[in-house]
Length: 387
Image (cartoon, rainbow, N blue to C red; front, side, top):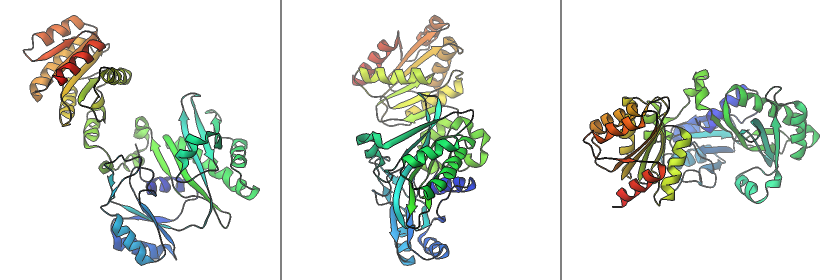
C-alpha cells in the first residue's frame, strides 16, 4: 500500500525524524491561509499523487508570496500530472501540500528496503540525492552505498556512522545523521514498510539535516496490525478494478494486453503471462484467485476481467492442489453461466481430479476450449483471439 508524502512525513515525525512543517489543502484559498500560518516565505507548493518525479512534471513550485502560493495551488488542482512513474495517462491532482521553505545547501539520498538476495533490510544511501537519482543508479552505481542490517540487532550506531561518513558529512552533520538513520530504520520496521525513501535529505545553509521528501510503502499482509496506517489509503489513486478485486481477496493488477488471465498462485500467474507473450500476444492482467477459490470468487474474477474493454479472450490456468480440479471446473462453469461470457475462453487444468474436471467442462454445454499443458493453452487462446 502506498500513501501520500504528507502522510509519510506525519508518520516519520512521530518517530523523531526532522521534516518540514506543512499542511495539506484542498483549495487555493486554504493554501494561501496556511502559508501565512506557517510563517514568512518562501513556501513549497507540492502536488500530492502516488508517483515520483513531480518536480520535473510541474508538480512542485516555490512561492515567494502568499498570493503566489494561492496561484500555484489553483493551477495544480485538477491538473493531470504526468511523470515517468505515472505513465502517459498521468494522475489528477486533488490535494496539495503547503510547506515551509528550506535554504538548501546540499542534497542526499537515503532509503531502506528489503533486499531479497541477503534476506535483510538494507540501508541504501548516496551523496547524489535529488530529482536525478535514477540516473545516478543507472550511470554511476558506485555512488550508491549499501549497508545490510542484521534483523536480530537492528541498525547499529557504528553502521549509521559509517554510512554518514561515506555520504561526505562533516562531524556536526554525522552527529545529526546517526539518530536520523536510526529513527528511520525504527519507523521502517515498526510500521512494516516494504520501502522507505527519503529523496532528498537536505543539509541547509545553517548546517541542519532535514528529510525534505518522504515515500513510504507498506506490506499489505501486515496492515491488520496498523489500522491507522490502513485508513490512510487513498482509493482515488488506485485502479477501480484492483480495489474491487481486493474486496474478494483477489490479487489483480491491470496490464495493457488483450488476453485476460485467471490463475491460482502468483508464480503460475507470472509463468502464464510469460507464455502468452511467448506466443505473440500480451496479457491484460495479473489475477491470482488463490488456492481456495470459491464459485463466488471465480465469478467475481470473471466480472473484473470482462470489465476491461481491451480483453478479447480469457485464459484460465489452474493447478489443482488443495483445491481439486473438479471443484474449480464447477466454479468456472457456474461463473461462465452467470456472467455470460461471449469471448473465447480456454481452460487448462492440472492436478487432483483433472480428468473429472475436464469432463465437467466438456458436458457444460458452454463454448469452453480445454487445453493440455500451458503451451497448448497459450497457443489456443492466442489463435482464438487472432481468428
